[in-house]
Image 1 (cartoon, protein in one colour):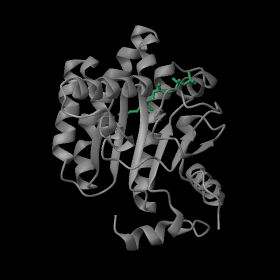
Image 2 (cartoon, protein in one colour):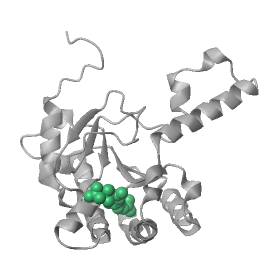
Image 3 (cartoon, helix red, strand yellow):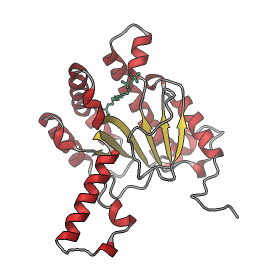
Image 4 (cartoon, protein in one colour):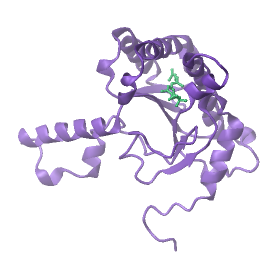
Length: 250
Ligand code: FPP
């Protein structure tokens, strides 16, 4: 999407200069959305994919550079087997179905999380989508799958401890930059705004390190109902915030 186009499509009440560069989203409420309609939970997840596609397109249109979505947490394995199985198949099917369109829209896909534990066919689809979109220069779309922030930080600590043990680095070399370079999000800017749907006010083990100074916006809306108007509301709220990063304003 060209800058010109994003200027045209941006709602008049949003400030182009204060669009968050990185938006993260906890897509909560799929199950409740389906239950409210007397439908199986999996229908909520299917509808959730449509909402995510719309958000990705909207981010691209309005000038957001990075979108990170929490698709499956390390804790989600505790759900009933048929739901887990459905989600894994859904991820694979959606990736296969949407890849050409993502290419056409210049989207760069990255999966973050412990991918080795995912079904092999899904791992193959993930590797293919990341390889194929690696040189795309449009919006960066990160999908957190089998992601857990505590585990991410633990893995980083283990990797760094090994470097010390092997005398490749000294204790004094351990700093924030080194730790960040061992997280799944290596090379990404931290989120400016995290949106959580369906009213819960917690991070649920998502981007704990990266959200140190990120703004949080919670809406009661259930994820499948999240749309451009909802996103506009989130951005309006975000643009009113006074981000001081622990300092005082002059
Ligand atoms: C949380 O709602 C949602 C999930 C655990 C799954 C989210 C996945 C998608 C929206 C599909 C994304 C697809 C791709 C390809 C990335 P919930 O089930 O916890 O809802 P509840 O709290 O109402 O039960």
